[in-house]
Image: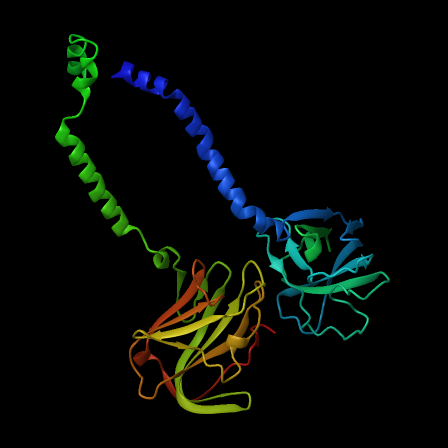
Length: 174
Length: 203
């Protein structure tokens, strides 16, 4: 039995070799075909901004970013508020952006949306989203409600449709 | 194998493979067996609905049920012929549950978008008439919000096997679904009940 089998493998060596190359290549091509457009159209390439640094993004200067723990009147028991301040220097063209999310680094990698329902006193000058009409530098000030045992560090994730798939990932540690 | 190998070298070279060739009936038998096996494999392969079924998490009143991104604790269940919420009141055949709900990983898209009650195969969605947790907005990570859900049932429906389903998206496939099973006939009945105001469980 041993010798004829070896013979079979030998006489089909080229076809078998082609199989070894083509099966993974097909898998890779199908995967790339499915995922490339998804990844191009969504924030998938992080540009990290270290604390205190700034960065050119979509024609604007983003950063520095900072964060601190705060207390607000309407927060429930067992929670803490992370207030993030993110400097934006709009350039040309104007910067549109989605409201930044707060991401936990490590652990469960939880994600928080900005919360404007925590009883913070109304301030007409406080911005919570990128203002496309602004020409002078301004600060985004955003509150996130997290459980008491969450301590960071975090990243603040900001993206704009025109710059996708790149997005700003600003590291903050309150 | 040994015997075969011993006899094989004696005939001329061309005959050697013929000795190892399967008898003609064997090819047909194997072919038919493969088709039958494939037929059974197709029979037991789950359909799309089963393959993408939600992951059910059974819940009990008073205990916490934890799904992927949804944690629910049912705190009370009762039937009433009159419910009120805020300044709103309505009579009817009502089933009301109180619950705490929180998310686990993300806050994005975490409202209770699927709140359905099935009683003996008939499905009801949570009433949108009173203010309830069904329109309560996003859940918070690790910080429970409390509220009620009210289901308006047809007059006379007072028994049957009930199944209350909660999930985060209207399309419940491939995500956790919290399921409270109960017998409608055993649910305590009161004349009048009030829905909880939606808010933090620990303000």
